[in-house]
Length: 280
Image 1 (cartoon, rainbow, N blue to C red):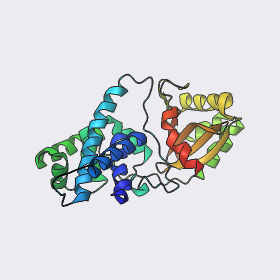
Image 2: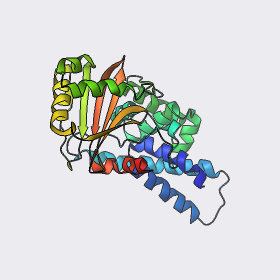
Image 3: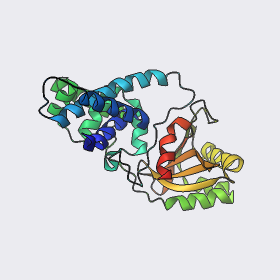
C-alpha cells in the first residue's frame, strides 16, 4: 500500500491545493485500510484511489468554507518540483498558475476536471469513482471548462530557473523603468500572508502598480535577505530566508519572456513543507 502513497497524495494535493491536508487525507485512508476487517477488496489501488479522491473532495468543501473568512488572498500551498519527494509524484503535480486558476471551481468540478484532463480518466471511470452518472460527469466537466475558459490542464511552465537572474539583476539595480520592461501589460502580483504575517491584501494589477510594489518591498524588506533560486510547481521561484527560516516563497509565471504573474506565499503554515524539503 505504501507504494501507492505518492500517487494518492498527488491526487489529493491537486484537488485540495494544500499539501499538508493532502498528506492527512491519504494517511487517514491508508490507516482505515490497514484496520479494515471483513470482505476482501479485489482491486486495492482502485479502492484507495476512490477513497482518497472522495475524502479530498469533502476536505476541499470544508476548506472552501474556511476561505470565506481568510484574511486577504488565499493561494495554494506550493510544493518543490526540482527535487524528488517520497510523498509525491512530481510529474503529476499541476503547475502553480493552473492551481491558482482551479480555485475558481468548486470541489466536484475540480475533481472531475483534474481526473479527466490531468489523469486521463474517461467519463465512465469518473462516474464510478465519484458515484455520479456518466452524463453528470460530462456536464460537470463542461461547466468547469467554461469557467476556466478552456485553459489547458497540462500547461506546464517551461521557463528555466535561470530566467530569475535577469529579474534579480534588475530588481537589485533599483531601475524601475527596466523592471517595467520585464512585465506584461496585464501583470498581476498576489500575496498570501494568512493574517499571520504582513502581506498585500489586494492584488496589484498592471505594470505601474506591480513594478512600484515589487521595487518598494524589495528595497524595504528583501535586499539584505538571503534569496535562493528554486522550482515550485514547475515555475521558477525565489526563497527568502530570515535566520535560516523560510519567510517568503516568491513564484514567477512567465509569458513570452516577460513576467505575467508573481505570487508571494508568506503564510508560515504553507511554507513548512518547503522548509523541510530544502533541509534534505
